[in-house]
Each structure stands twice: as structure tokens, then as C-alpha cells.
Length: 393
Image (cartoon, rainbow, N blue to C red; front, side):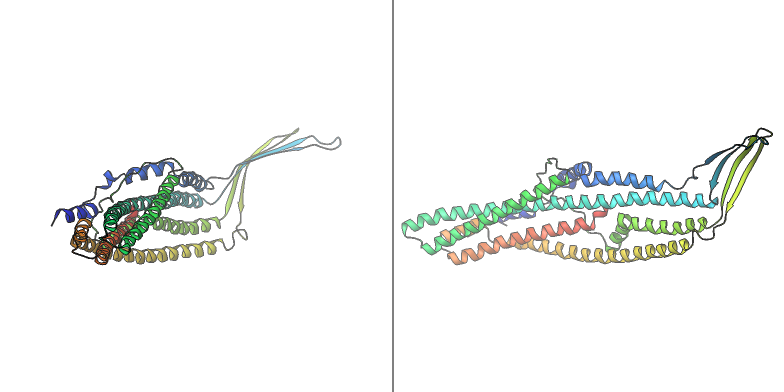
């Protein structure tokens, strides 16, 4: 393999640095600390946990004092004092406590879903920035090559060794290269602004120009098992299903009698009497249909979990097949690039008259298209792998 071909492969297909060296990990840490969506999500998480912990305690006790005044001359004044505590059937509090724990866990899973979404978006933005920088390097080489050709053919045109049509082709190549470079710069600025926005509006440094090394694609069954076990959305839906089942038990317990227990004292001018108060509430109408409603909600939660699990499995399998195809295409393009004729070889052949201008542009376009296709496939592969491995974020 000659030196020029080696340099091409070194530039576009060399071994990539590890994730810890890439800076993407540092970017994700910064965004996790500064992202306003995540900061708001943390407050919502705390609010949901506090809400989940309410309603599981005894109701407030009640205290009553009644003062009675006797009329006329026949009797004295009297008063009545009572302190009463109401409570549900004892099993209600056991079930409410279990329900509270499930809702607290569910709040954490909901925050984990939001966190994963934000970090995946940030990771994909970093991947897009790396891709655009690699594309910029290609466009700079393309523009530099066009400048060299323009200088060469300007001299040839002055000497009568080239015609205007050939010179115009080179000018058109420069225009196309400049246009592509401007669009690349605009896209790169937009992605950097997106990254800063995800970082809570704070400036963030990210200068990587190479993608991180990805782990080998595991067997699909292994990947699916790990993903389904760790996916926060499925875990949240599972928690909701468990909570819905527990709601059935709570509502069933609430259909049992409620009790009042308290102290009572009657006093007046003649005598004082002490005693206790006990009461029972017969659940006839207040909680009608609550158990049936809770059962229906629980059934929905179970079916919703099953539906989302099947949908996720189908999505994972599709992404896995895409990753396999993209990996094969990436390797194939790397091999193809090694067989292409480089700019230096083509320029030398053109300057010595070995190939015509038409043949030159066919060959150079094939080279640039091959490298651009390689970059596109490489970026798409990184993106698909990020989705497959997002459960690790």
C-alpha cells in the first residue's frame, strides 16, 4: 500500500479513542448537573415522593367542648368535653404503606426516563458534532485541492495549454466545495448551540474529532435481556402495574368498617362523669364501585406494560439489524476507500496528461463520494448503537 493510501485510511478509518478519552463522558456529566429539564425533574421527583408519602397516616383527632347553661332557677350549668380519634380498618394502613413505597419507586423511575432522554440527546449531539468536524476536514481537503487545480489551470490557460471549459469545471468545483463548507459550518454552530442549551445555557467545551470506540455488538438475546431489565420506562410501567394492584387492596380495605375511639367527660354544678366513646362507620354507599374501578385500572396497567414490552422488543430487534448492516457497510467502505486513487495520484496523472479532465472529475468525485458515504454510515452506526446502549446511561 503506498503512502498516500495509508494516510487516507489513517484519517478516516484509524482506531478510535476510548470513551473516557473522548470527552463525551465529561459532557454528559456537565449536562446532568446543569440541564434545566433535569433540575426541574428533580424537584418534581421530590414533590411526587412527598405526595406518595401523604394519606397513609391516621386522620387528625378531633376535640369538642360543649357548654350548656341552665334556664330559670331549677338547674345549674353543664359542659361536655370529648377527644376522639378516627381510624380505618387496621389492614388499610399496611396496604397504604406498601402503596406509598411503590409510588416512591415509580417517581424515581419517571425521573430516570427523563434523565436518559436528555443524556441520549446530548450524546447524539456530540456524535453529530464529531461527524461534522470529520466532514469539515474532508471539505477542507476538497477545497484545497480545487485551489491547487485552479492555480495550475490558470497558468495553463495563460500559456494556451488548457481551454476555458476545463478551467470552468474547476471553478464550479470550488463553488460546490465552498457551498458545502458553509452549510457544514452552519450545522456545526447549530449543534454546538444545542449542546450549550442542554447544558443549561452555560458554555461547554467539546473538541473531539473522532468517535469513541464502541464495544462489540453482543448477541441479540443478551442485549435484549439487559435492556429490558434496565430500561427505566419499562421499570416505571412495572411499578405502575404493581401500584395499581396495590390500589385494589387499599380500596378493598377501605370498604371495611371505620372506627372512632375517644375520651368523654360530662360535668356541671352537680356531678362530673368520665367515660369513653367508641363508634363504627358502616360502609354502605361512600366507596361503591371503587374496588371495581381499581381492578379495571390494574388490568389496564398490566396490558399497557405488556404492550410497551412487545413494542420495545420489536424496536430493539430492528435497531440491532440496522447496527449489523451499518457495521458491515462501514467496514466495506473502509476497504473501498483503500482501493481508490488519492488526490495526489489523480493530480499527478492529470498534470502529466495520463487522464483527461472528464476522467479526473469522475475519479475525484468517486473518491469524495466514497469518503462521504463512509462518514454517513459511520455516524449512523454510532447513532444506532447509542440507542441500543442507552440503557447504560
